Image (cartoon, rainbow, N blue to C red; front, side):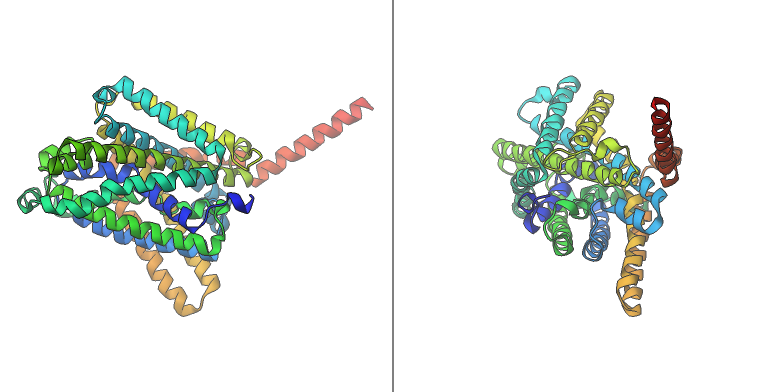
Length: 450
């Protein structure tokens, strides 16, 4: 790809931060209110885990920059089958999770047009966003990055505004009065919160996945990953804490626009309207980055023959147009299937839980791959230190799976078993057999004509 169309370190940083600070941060306060203010401990633990993951992906991005991210690392260090499994899981997790983003955006926009809360109208509005951002990706990744740089700025307005000025309206009694309302033990509540809050950090690998469109990836991927996570973590903890001290727990649990609700309580209706508009723009812009991420991951696997060849077909600007459109069609189907949900918040919780569990498996594979990459590049002392860090990261990922819904974990396990059936169609041996069959057929046809 021409250098002029590649993404710089600032663009890549906003890509990472924007992918994380999209729908997740805007709806999570309502989801976490069902647990209580004990969820702040979940935020702190998840932040530590996300920084560990950021360190892993930053190290991988520096020592082994690969277009395709987790898929590429699994393929290189564990073989083609694990590459196939990782890419399939990761790809499904991404486009499933993508559905939550326009749902959140439309949920906030319903502040202005309450009719958008109606299932049919909400469905139509969500589909418009899906296809608009899909066509934006057809224009090219540099264009998506520029759009997201602007929309991330809009997203920061309500996040930072609430995180800073919300403390003037903070009520300690409200905050302390709902420490653990989940009905679980404190450990169980914090574990559940850790699983929920991880959704807000999904995107930590964004710069590594799009290494192929990032300038100087050996340096910029690492910088963008760490800077993006650090920026997001500060905003998350501060804003979530203050909202839980501004809005009574019962009211917060049922809100589809918690940031707007907090702003309205602080300064009135105009504050809620401003926050809703900024949240809508920020979440909608985040969708563009995630569609790019999903298409690039599928293209990298397709280039290696581990995914249908249609995903590797690109236009003159090296954009996998057909892959982008396939993702849009699948998202459309998912939106239609879930469109009967009563609220945007209900759809969001189920979709994000499934996406998080599926994403954690590729994260675990990447952590193990990081150890081998470092072992090849560093001394024994450095290798031992990285072994400890990667082990802690794996333990964190397993704990997050433990804190997720048991039913969703079971379905995820069955899905992993199910996709194994399709690997023989994409194995190296199978590809060689098909190639030999085509060559034999061509020779036979030529002999018959002569």
